[in-house]
Image (cartoon, rainbow, N blue to C red; front, side, top):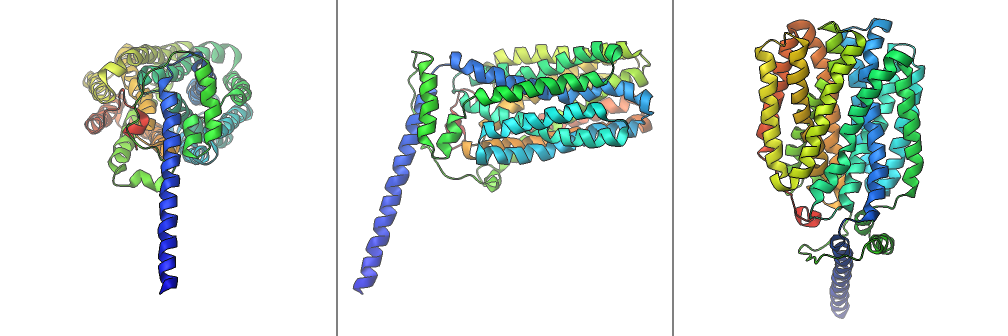
Length: 467
């Protein structure tokens, strides 16, 4: 009996000690988070935004480069609409795999560890695409390159979000994420100039060489303090936070309301009772937005050339207008998002895009000019949602599953981007150009309905949004 009593006493004592230890760890984590939140955005934050932004720039460049190469390859390799859709879709299928794999890697080994290898893989494979001599070879190379492209942006989004403080996070992040549409816009301009004059292979060389330079610069960045804290690596997190504190004397009072956990994350938590609805809503939003966005973006250069019979240079120039409009729209979004809110912006943008696309269906998309103005405007508006989702998705998950949660969500964008061009190719051949825009409008309606289920995250600490 005494033995049993002693065992019970020991058990209770161990439980008390564990609770004390957990409480201590929670207090240390809370103190470190409070210090991060008290530091206003300073010169320290410029470097990670520029370097990681450069990685995102070449991610966008590499993703779009094929769209400006295809008008040449269509004639060179006698590609059919179905083959065009398949080769676009293969890259996005690789991106879906890459998003999940590198998202898992980022949770286990760190945001920067994962980001380095995504950039390396996508850059090396971009250069490899130069040596593709036929449809099958390019199909394989784009699939492998897609694995790298798919992993970079969600990992980068988690990293930059974790460096942000609650107040002004929307503008801070959106100005960083502006790099992506800028990458699309510049790649469109480069494609317009380079492909007709130097040849299609130069698009892949420029993207690959630039990405390798960024790969080296990533070694100069510091790991996310929030990720280090979530892993219980408090000393390393403290060193990084001290660097940030040394960059400015200004401090902002902060109150931590939610206890900080250093529990190990598991992807299954995405489907727990607390996060299940968030997960399903955000997955559908990613699918809807990118079905429209990348369906338009990847097909417009080829549509102008094959449907409206514009010369190559004019087709590429017309397609580049959509990226210019998107860039302007994202700039507006960056400065308004913390006032308007994530949910209101997404709902409004989906509705406006649906109206523009429906107008194209009603007038039969008879002229290249109507597609140039209405289609490009719809792409620009829906493009603000695609960028906004990179801000919103990391916000709704805790640090322990932030990268993998964002990765799983972006996998749906990759699947949508793989499916959309393929479907567009077959709808175009069977039903004509007007039906393509009706399809996009219908998907946009689904997105608007799901946006009604978003939670509002503006001006809230990440730890309060997702405990």
